[in-house]
Image 1 (cartoon, helix red, strand yellow):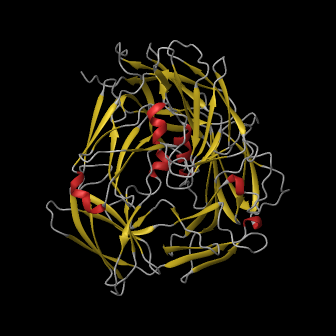
Image 2 (cartoon, helix red, strand yellow):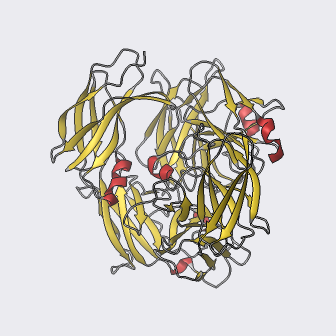
Length: 625
């Protein structure tokens, strides 16, 4: 069964009570409507036995680290008698997957969530200990009663998160949905309008859990927004931010887009209440605000709060900026109003101690399409420029006029326009026709010239990679993408493999059907041992990367994407694959009992040569006893 979701939650074939929580309406898609390829896998229980008739669920958001843009593609299939499955998924993106089945004794068993599932090589999903029943108590909700009834959701996973609602009684008590798959789990408490007040990470413990979320105090705050000449700016948008720039996209951390709080009045003021400490990090009396006003540069304020309930007042002065306007039309000049979501990205001025030298990178923000296909992005910084993207539903690609070839996937996101600097006046893009963009076809190969399955790609025009998301090549290393004219830095990497980088001028002077080839570097293996020997019964120890020296900046982030942690064997040996030689990598050991607790060993710098390294000695993490 292939499902496209209408609401921001996943329809999955859950048993019993959890199925009742899935309130969204779904529209079934015909399997042949969108080209799909098969993801293969095998389900095994704790004894290694293959499981027949297990329900396997795979899902993928258009942007794997954002649940606020578009709808997820969800696929459910059953395993065959030999425990194997084949799921028709979209290429050009990675999925998350897990399986569950009912034992003859009535118990329900589940596997862990597997990320980065792509068509091609089979994946093995193994049974893990089921989550215990977890009751939830949210304390201090009455402080926020003015914001309306609070919304509580549980989110499983960092990439391609599974999001489900949680019902609370009047006392703020409830129970998490039964049957949640194991994985990094957050409890989010939001206002009725969707603003995040508290995000609490759920610890992973084998016993029955009772999780308490303590709501922050409410701090009154008034923001006055002025222009540089001191004029009061009405209708300025005030957002609450949770993260800077692309930290989540690059590191794999959870990424949350800014939440709209409200708008300024005719006097340029907006009074509201903010959490008295950071909603995610907690314990820090600060709130990050993003202010956007027409004809002015976007502005961020790192607001340090004071103890007590007195009103915190802040005056934000915005420099002159410009606005971005355009209109999407088809090949016949008719407005495009569905099938795509425009997103724009630009920097902001900042009043902050954040080390951005006065400029703050912001995650791309979705824009609304009007009935005539037009859109408007406010508050561009006239020095740092802007990037405009489109999130495209693959079912509408042909209707939008994109010259899609049937032999390569089209990613769900691609750039529409890039400007390093914007003019002193508004940036008018006029009518944008996607059929006018040149479609460039890529193929990623290894050092032997063999196509690389599931390689990742990144694009940027500034000489370093600040990805909105990673692009995923298909099972034979192919990807196609419409690109506006310009010079691009293109990077490719394979998790656990090599990296590649090139500069490409669009339009390219070659046959349209001739692919652009990126050849990955030959990866090397670092072998070593961990001393002293690991204690019996300890959780699994990993060797992780903590730094890279001697690498050009445009390759650095690719290197971090390519290197994946490796587990230490019972005898203390390990083998870690690095993407290239002639660099210095900083490694250490790590033990994680659960996502909120980790112990690290010493950081060791390892210079890599052309033949790799075979005698690295790392210290085991200190015992917590």
